[in-house]
Image 1 (cartoon, rainbow, N blue to C red):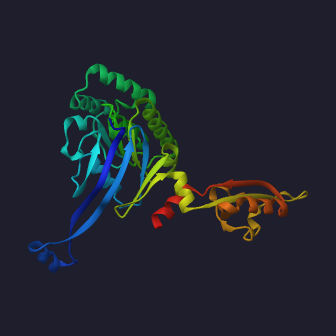
Image 2 (cartoon, helix red, strand yellow):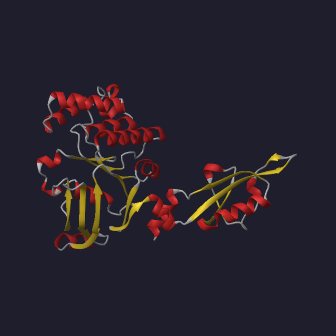
Image 3 (cartoon, rainbow, N blue to C red):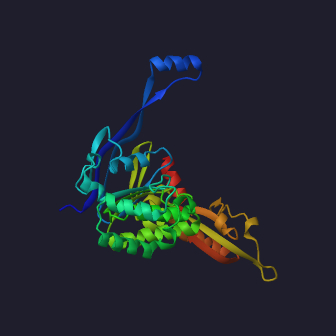
Length: 334
């Protein structure tokens, strides 16, 4: 039996989008004869995901990420190619498949807005035909991980964004899906809320072995959860592999940050006034304003660091990889 949960081959989706010029005359002409243009949202994408993997699915806005997730969850029919998820063709919408997967979209509500989440959960129990014992067991586990109980009796409209995302995600997991498609599950949350959702997803994956395909514009989500990423841009697959490999290929350099001791009398000084351009390309690092950072080629790090230590009154020195945001941006631009 194959260990691959998701197999995508040559998957494509093209939309026909109506277009017309502005003005009343164009509106009248468009009423009788509408013009369309083809928009290729996804173009011949191929990838495979093993059972139990957590994979980041990245790309700029409009890259085709959500369209791909909608095809894999059965909401959209492709215009070309095939997909196999857990042995099913998603857009056939077979009941056994729908009971085996979930799609959670951070910008869409699955729970009724004006009633408590507890009522929507009971509706989900009926839809998925869960026995009382299975429902209570799963709910207890989700409550243990997400602290749901204090939120269940409040109308969903009265929950904060972070609280709503917790009950939304839990609602999608009541039937214990084997595959999770998550589209921006931490969007709009504060740092504390993001961390809690990440910890929950990591623990859920560990406990159940579920496969997770995650899209997020927060790179901290990706680096915390995913060893592998897939990058899509203009509907085309651009990269499929490890984050470290991407960094070495796209941004083969390191950042060296130094804080200088100006003199024994002055003690530690502000290093920002020192010109270190002879050692590398100066870069800004807002998260560590006390140090001056220069960017150097990875193979030159040892040589440059030795020079700096011998020529500068260094109090503290840091060698770091480039921020993942920079690496991903470079990948998009390429």
